[in-house]
Amino acid sequence: MTENVAELKTAEESGRGRRRVVAGVVISAKQEKTVRVQVEYLVKHGRYNKYLRKRTRLQVHDEQRECKVGDKVEIMECRPISKSKIWRLVRVVEKVKE
Image 1 (cartoon, helix red, strand yellow):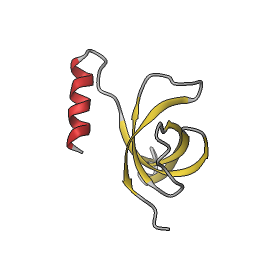
Image 2 (image 1 turned 90 degrees about the horizontal axis):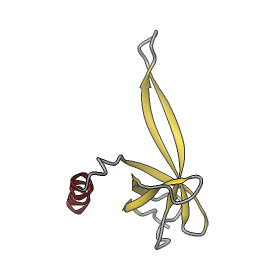
Image 3 (image 1 turned 180 degrees about the horizontal axis):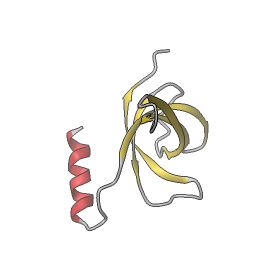
């Protein structure tokens, strides 16, 4: 994690601003150099003050093709790589047990 923090600081110093870093689970790894990651988050309901579980599915660039379905990964926002890919893989937090 410390190398990622250093990487964030260098991106901030270069004038590009701080980039979002989120964690999620790989749900598909069928494409070349692209994986689909599901990120879950909580949103508070305005009237009932209950928390709702929401999710979003993101296309993530995986240059070394190291992710498998079920892996927990950390991803970071980046420049647009294609029409739907604006995220890249930072690291694999936990590998799935086979």
